[in-house]
Image (cartoon, rainbow, N blue to C red; front, side, top):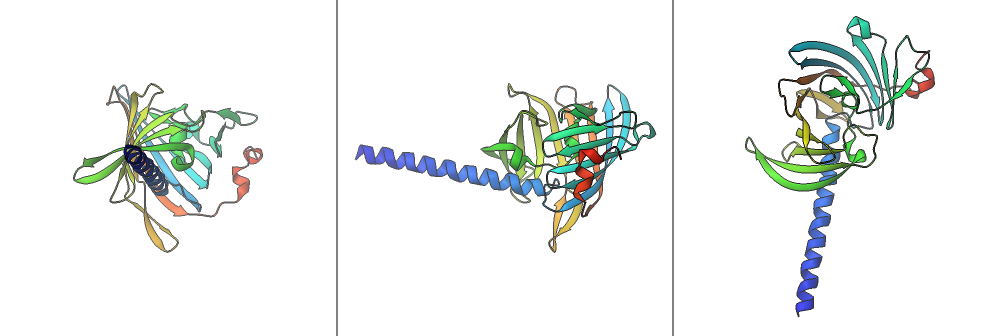
Length: 245
C-alpha cells in the first residue's frame, strides 16, 4: 500500500512538472509574437533615447526582420548613418562605410546606454531559452506567470532572464536580466500600443521597452517602436556578402 502511495505521489509530481513545462513553453511562444517573433517578414523603426550619467542622446534605426534574421540600418544621428547590424540566426555582424568588410560582433555588446546589440532585433526567446515556471504574481490586479529563462547557447544577449508574462494578454510586461550568479543587473519594462494585422487577426506589437540599470535607475535606455508593418523581404538582404554592395 505504501509503495502504491509513493508511486501515486511521484506520478502526480511528474505530471504536474510536465504540465508546467508545457505551459511555460506555450507562454514564451505567445509572448514572442508581440516582440517580432513571427514567421512573416516585418519592418519597423526604433528610436532609442538614452540617459547615462546625466547625459542624454538618441539613435534611430530601421529594422527589417524575417524569421530569425534581421537587417538593422542606422538612420540617426548623421555620424552613424550607413552603419548596418546584420543578424544571421544567432550570428551577428557589423558594417560601416569605413570598413572593408563586416566584422563579427556579440549580441551582448553595448549598443547605446543600457541597450545591447541584441535588444534591437526581434525576440525569439522560445527558441533561445529554456523556460521554467517559477510562480504566479499579481501586478496591478492582473495575474502574471513568472518564468525563469536559461540560455541554450553562450552567444545570446543574456545568460538568464526572469520574465513576467500576463495571463490576460499572454505578453511579457517585465524582465530581470540576470548574471550567471542570478543577480539582476538590468530591468526591462514593456508596453504594447502598436497593432499588427496577421492572418486577418489583429495582434498587439511592442511600442516601448525601457531598460534600466538595476543599481543606478537614472541610467536607462528607452526603445520606442513605430510604424510596424508586415513586409516581405528578399533573402538577399540578410546575406553578409551583400552588405557592402
